[in-house]
Amino acid sequence: MKRKILMENTGGQIRTFFLEDDDIVEIHCAAAEEVEKDRHALGDIYVGRVKNIVQNIGAAFIEIAPGINCYYDMKEADHAVFTKKAGRKSLCIGDELVVQISKEAVKTKAPTVTGNLSFSGRFAVLTHGNTRIGVSSKIPKKIRDEYKDRLKSWQNDSFGIIVRTNARDVPFEAVLDELSTLRREYEKVIYSAPTRVCFSCLKAAPPSYISDLKNVYMDGMEEIVIEGKELYTRIQKYFEAELPDKKELLRLYDDSFPLCKLYSTDTALEKALSEKAWLKHGGYLVIQPTEALTVIDVNSGKNISKGRNEEGIMKINLEAAHEAARQIRLRNLSGIIIIDFINMDVEENINTLLREFRGFLSEDPIQTTLVDITPLNLVEVTRKKVHRPLYEQVGL
Image (cartoon, rainbow, N blue to C red; front, side, top):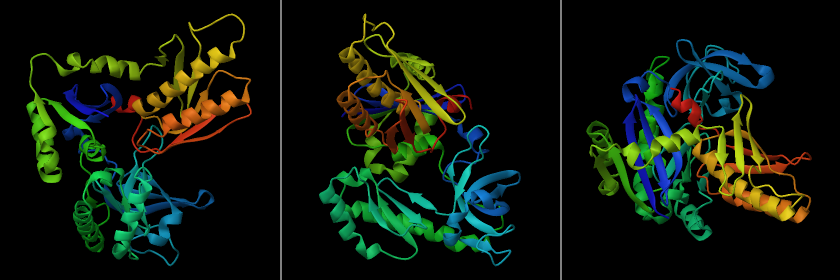
C-alpha cells in the first residue's frame, strides 16, 4: 500500500491528511502551537489532587490545574504513584498523585486521567500499572511469539511493555534501544514526582500534529509533504531527533499554487463534515453524531427498483458497510456507533454483511469492534475514544 501525508498550516490550524493509495483516509486538525500551549493535551502527565470522590460510580475527580477537574477510575488507585497521602484509605480527598490525560475533554465531558501511565515510542509502549508483556495482534503470530520470548528478561513488577505494529519490520535491537529510552523517561517521572508541587506538569506531550506523525504506520510511506517553511522546520527538527532514518521522507512544498488546491483537501474536509456521504451507485449514508452515540442511516437513494430485491439490497448494504467503516475512521467517530442498514430477509446475507463489515472495520488502526446486531436489525459498533471527532477539532 502506498502512503503519503500532507500537512498545511491554514486558518490558525495545522491540518494533517493521511493518504493510502491516493485516497484520504484520515484528517486531523490541531490548533497552532502557540494556542495549544494553553491546552491540557492528551498524554500530559501531572501531579493532581483528589477534589471529590463519587462512590456510587466508582470515580474520583482529580484537579490537575486550578478549576480543571478530570474523571479518574478509582479501580486504578491500587497502582497509583502518590506524592502526598491525606488518609489511610486507598484514595482520599486531598491525596496528591501522578496522573496522565488519557482522553481529551469532549463537549460537556471533562478530560479523563489515568494513574496507569504510558510512555509511547514508535515501536513500543512502556506501561505503569500493567506489568504484562504484550505484542500487537496485527503482527504475525510467529513474530509475536519471538518478541514475547526475547523480552522475558524485561519482565518486572513496575512496568509492562506493549510492542506496536510498527515493530513488525524493524530489527529487534531498534526496539530494545527505544525501550531503554522509554524506561529512562519513566524513571525520571517516577523519581522526580515526590519532589514536585501539586499541579506540576511532569511531562508535556508534543503537539498533537507531532504525535500523529509518531503514531502513523510508516510501511509504504512515500513522502510527507509540508506546506510552509516554519512548519517544515518544526517537523524537520522532530525527525532529526526522533526519526532520523525517515528524514528523507520530508518534502517542503513552497509552490505558489496552494497545496489544498493541488490535492483538493478543502473539498475532502468539507465532505467529511457533511451529514451525507454518497455511495458510488446512488445510495447514501446519513451520519448524525449525538452526545451519547453516533447514528449512521443507510439509504438506497437513486438505487431503487420496483418491488423488493434482496440481491440489490445486499449490494447496497455491502457498499454502505465499506463506506461506513471509511467514514468512521475519516471523521474519527468513537464511542457507540449504531448503523441502520436496509433490512434483509435472508439470514445468510445478514451473516455475510456482518462478516464483511467486521473485515472493513479491522483495517482501522484504532481499536474498532462490531458488537452485535439487535432484534431491530441495528448494527452496534464501538470505537476506542482517544481524540475528539473531526467536527470538534475543526471547531477549535
